Image 1 (tube, rainbow, N blue to C red):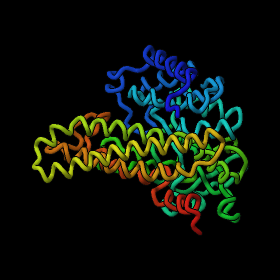
Image 2: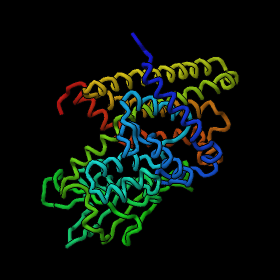
Image 3: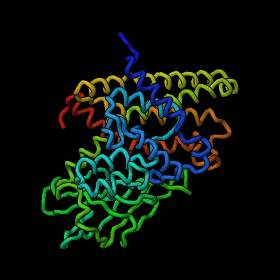
Image 4: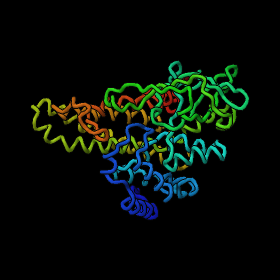
Amino acid sequence: MKLTFGDDVEAFRQEFLAWLADNRPTAEEMAADPAVSSAHVPEWASRWTRRLFDAGWLVPGWPPERGGRNAGPVEVLVYLEALSRAGVPRTTNPQGLGIVAPSILDYGTDAQIKDYALAVLHGEKAACLGMSEPGAGSDLASLSTRAVLDGDQFVINGQKVWTSGANYADFCFLFCRTDPDAPKHKGISVILVDMNTPGITVRPLAEIVKPEHPDLNEVFFSDVVVPRENLVGKMNDGWAMANGSLAHERGMVWLNFVMHMEQDVASLLAQAPAALARMEAPERAVVADGLVESIIDATAARCLGYRGFAKLVRGGSAPEQALMKAFCSEAQRRITLRSAEMSADHTVDIGVTPASDPTWIERYFTSYGGTISAGSSEIQRNIIAEKVLGLPR
């Protein structure tokens, strides 16, 4: 059994590490102007995104004209690992890079690719994703935000919610209903909406861990007029586009979870000796059990991730992706809680650290969001029941 990468992959890794050492933003740059929203692109992040694109390192699995270098899946894996270990974000607008830009590249017109997709890939614009609604939640088929075609323009009315980064985004990749009489799945379209268009109101939602810099928003559309040319793909074909768009996100999501878990476990173990020394024997035994469980969680997650990844590389399906999402997001919550508990008198120090360096209790509160975003644990369990266990719907 060989558990190492081949020489060609190692050469690819070394090439990237050498480039990264010469071109990465410094820790001081990132700390001086941290991204405070998932669509906030500070100047250093904009320069960094363009530098990655020009060198073919932004999305290495893509062709060169789209910011890549035709790298294989295993090479992309080692690239993402290297970035994570270096503590450098690939982007501060993950939904723009991971979902919106590739979807426009797949379905958009040449003008949309130039004005929106490439603008995101060049670090010039940031995007938000308009999917969830108050009456529909994550059920896209139940959305009610309406776009009515009137001549050469759409008139949009409705509301989105939990829209990450809408308070900083330049444009929204908006899912809306364009045929109310069609079956739920067949009357949806996607329209690119400039967030500065009159009639749009963005209302940030207060968050307990960072009240000064909320990321989630309500977005209201009141008679918002958008040119017809901003329609992405075919009219009423948004359902198929949604499945394609989210597929862009799912491929390597597991790796982020695993890398964060491993880094958190390392931090947990680093603070463990001092914390254990303060405890009485019965408490110490319970905490030690928790530490071991966290190590096992992180190890199991990486093994499960590699198993699913290997299936995908061979061209098969990997229902492990759903299992990974549910397991990792819940294990992350356990790890951050243990770390917060071991922080003793610093446990409740919310808001006393820079935005780029949240306390463990802040990360624990934030971890609840990880069990909801990108498909809640309940949705993942339904997928596991139906596609892994073969249970009836």
